[in-house]
Length: 166
Image (cartoon, rainbow, N blue to C red; front, side, top):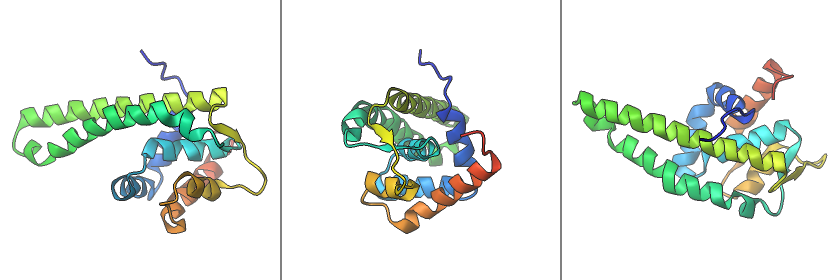
């Protein structure tokens, strides 16, 4: 069983709950096929003075495979059952089980992402001229400054609200 005693998980939950973050993340996931777990991890890295290094794609390969082969199919099944669930309690229960499995799968990915940071695989210290926006835009050329705005603001709000709790 995966050890879920992490610092990233509670940070991700707090950030995701900030105004505007959930819809922004889901939009980026659906519109640009970006991984929300990686996105939240990048925000968490930034709070720790870290950013991606040149080996990040290699370090992330196994986690990306997990997301592609496990998390995404669970999400697709759950979404496919949304309309039928309105007419069947059994389908609703099945959809709820899929939702729990999807969340567990994402938690597993976040645990593994945190381990990369802990072991310094694919990450390095930020330089003074680097900020979260720089990291996000380097991570995905598909992200615009407008796409990043809700996440950047939420990170600022979260850090002001909980300065000692990255």
